[in-house]
Length: 139
Image 1 (cartoon, rainbow, N blue to C red):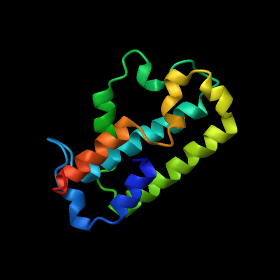
Image 2 (tube, helix red, strand yellow):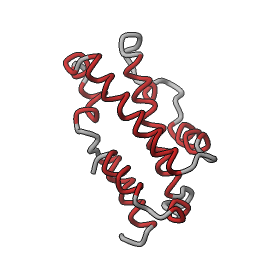
Image 3 (cartoon, helix red, strand yellow):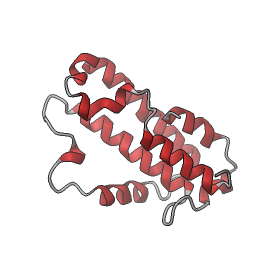
Image 4 (tube, rainbow, N blue to C red):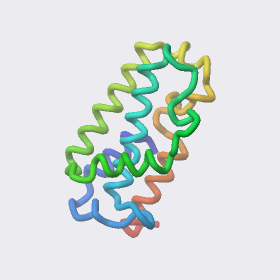
């Protein structure tokens, strides 16, 4: 399950499905916002690849839970179709950055960027797809 496959899936959902509870605190829309937040962080990281040796989420003091909450909050008033558009643009930008920076340069630290070479098909992505499926009653 790739991010683009999740986007295709989300695009087919009735609008009221976006408000279903997917976790104890996140609705389907919030799960998408959370994933968008991490895609944004990928873009930022790739834009700064020459400036730093450490990814933002590995910096001392980076609070993953706080970042997740901020990502969800950032998109609270964003409509689902706008969220999808934002996500697609970010994925396109991430792919362009991978091409422009160069895969070999990025692969030098495969531990940090391994997920960029899984075509978006990561355990993290699948985990959130399962949450959405469960919210829709398909568990």
